[in-house]
Length: 179
Image (cartoon, rainbow, N blue to C red):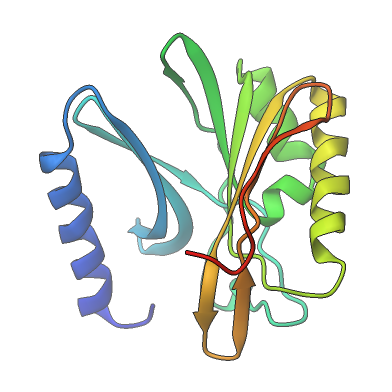
């Protein structure tokens, strides 16, 4: 994150994806973004040849997380339309807080996509479900919880991504510890 060359490579790859993505396809992925001298933990939306970026708003600084050391917090929502459906984007900790999801819904989101790198911990999946169900029921919104799977240094990410409908029912559950 602190190496200029790494950030430049990310910028080049985002542009490569943008130029090669078919016009009728939309993609959302996470990567750091540098703008105005600040570094953000971000979600990129590439759609119709354009790039839009969401900056994570809540930066955890507990346990294994040290995001405030590297990133600035974002302040704005990102809501887009795909197949006549309004979708809002949040990143990990933002889904555990009330304000980012509320803001996306107030901007018209009918579904929230949350990009996560939530490490494995005993009982953590039930906590995720409980928290996301709370956001869903508060906002009457569908929710797609996408979690990383694999390892990074001493962290293990268990996957277990899921989709929850507006009533709080899990409609899709992906496996754990499988790529």
